[in-house]
Structures are given as C-alpha cells and as structure tokens.
Length: 141
Image (cartoon, rainbow, N blue to C red; front, side, top):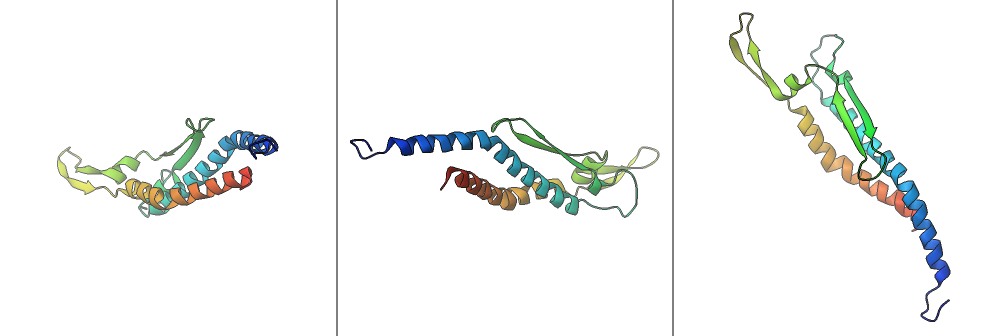
C-alpha cells in the first residue's frame, strides 16, 4: 500500500481485467448483435404475409443475414430478403391490366417497419442489458 492509501497491486489487477475485457469485447458484441438479428428474423418471418400458395420465392422463407466487420464501430448485421416481390408486398404497388391500364393500387403491409420498431423498443434494450451484464461479469463486478 502506498502513502495515499491506494494499493498499486489492485490497479494492476484492474488493468489486466480491463485488457481481458477489451480483447473479449468484439466477440461479446458480435454474440449479442447476432442474437438481436436472429430475433429480428424470427419476428419478421412471423409477420411476413403468406399468399397461401407454394412457390420457390416464399416471402417468409426468404430472409437471410450476415454479420460484417470485426470491431465495435464497424460491426453490423445485414438482413435482407431474397424474394423479388418483397418490396411490392411491403410498400404497395399498382394493379396493372394485361393491356397496361392501371386498375388500382394495392396498399403495402409495412411489416418491415413495424418489425424494426418492435425490435428497437423491446429486443434491443434487453439485449444491451445482457451485454452489459456479460462485460461486468468479465470485469469481476
């Protein structure tokens, strides 16, 4: 213990714990980002409208994801649909007859925006708390 009542051995131990967390942080962040993305995909699959017909471009089976980046600020997860008609169902489209005349407009379902709002309000805060708990556990708190 030094003259000011502070043990430098504790500071070294804390510094080592901090270095371990810094080395672990990218993996922890990626784990929790993947969990958020997977929950997003699960919810959007449930909310994707189903035509009731079997075809190879089923909307609810077309969702894919990929984690990109290696560090905290560059880490992101892309989620996309491989279905070519996704944007038409989500945003709406014109009904066009065989001769090219406009017959009307089909309103969009807007299930992507509603899913994003739901995930942002419910899933993200809970997952951030879990990530904070993981990092705190690694720090020894």
